[in-house]
Structure formats: C-alpha cells, structure tokens
Length: 260
Image (tube, rainbow, N blue to C red; front, side, top):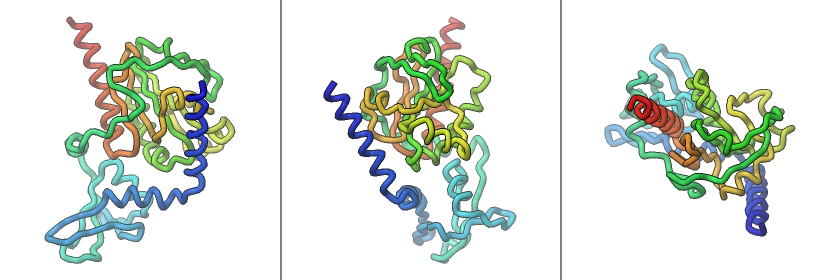
C-alpha cells in the first residue's frame, strides 16, 4: 500500500515538472534531434525558421511541415552545397512509407510491462460515465494509452492515434482505451479543440501507478487473452506503425486459427 502511495506521489510530481518546463523547448529539442541531413559532405540542421516547400512551390509553416514529417513525409535539401538551402517536402506513397517505417528500429519497450505477461485488472468508468472492466474485455484486442494533457509528445501523436482508431472502426473486436492523469474538467476543456477518439479515463493516476508507468506516452497492446503483445514508452516516429502492425498480426493469428 505504501509503495502505491509513493508511486502516486511521484506521478503528481512528474506532472508538476512538465507544467513548469517550457513545452515548446522540449518538443523542439526532441524533434530537431531527428532532423539532421548529411549530403555531399554538408550537414544540414533544421530549425523552426527553415524554409520548407513542396514541388509546387507552396511554403509550409513550421507546425505543418513538422507534423507532415512526423507522419512520414521526407524532407530533402534543395541545394546540398548551400548550408542555408531551402528544403523540399516530399509525400511518400503508402508502400514507400511502410518500407521507411519498417526499416526504423523497433520503438523502445516500456519498463512497466513484459511481453507475454497477463496484466492486472482494473475497473473504472470513462469520462462519459461508461463502466470499464479490463477483465471483461478478454476476447478482444485492447490498446491502452497512458498520457496527460501537458505531455507534448502525447499531443503530437494524437492525430495519428485518431487515424488508427478510424482505420479499425468497423471492427468491434478492437478496443482503444486511454488512461489520462488529468481530471475530468481539464480533459473536457482540452477535448474542445483537440479531439481524441480513444475511450478516455480521467484521473487515471492510480491505474498508471498500479502498473508502475512513469514515462509518457506509454502504449500497450493486449491480445484476446489479456496478455501483453506489444508495449512501448516515449515518442517514436514509427510507434503508430507498430501499433497497427500488432493489431494486424493478432487478427491474422485469429484468422489462421479459425481456418485450421
């Protein structure tokens, strides 16, 4: 009991730290650490002020090209011999994008979960008042997302998580649940401008503490037996790719079993 209290206190302290730190600084540091080009012996480090255009000559704002890059678009220097070059934004085909993302290292695993292990149950209600009992969801593929409103990496990947939900919206055997640390009012205010298609559990600090989650965002994919199939913590460009890949693999396993 004392251990759980200590973990809950640590969670509250982490939230406070995130609120105190300049979130733009954190995001820029993380983001620009990924965008560094080497061509013809030249090094190109992009910044918020970099000029990025597409093949038609349209110029994109920093936030727009950053999000497109994160979704898998490529950015290349127009003039590799000019350190102050402009950059070209290139949209990849679905096949090219999948090949690119599959070539990246697998996102780092969370220290809070173990593949193949059945996780502890939790019972609560979501922000709409609907009861959620994890044990009752056995027989379905369940995706869990641990996050909070002031977590900038959590917000960056949210549009792609919405796309993931939309991709599988016709399959009732897949359940998407987000466990937010924030209270109901804070979430409702946030969701007015930033919709999130997962089922949302508010005040989820105790659930996060139950699993020892201390890094955000954290994702977990559970198979139909309630066992961990995939898990990861932190921000990675190919997180959504691996979530989708995990879902497809589990569905394929089920189809193969039923055909046998």
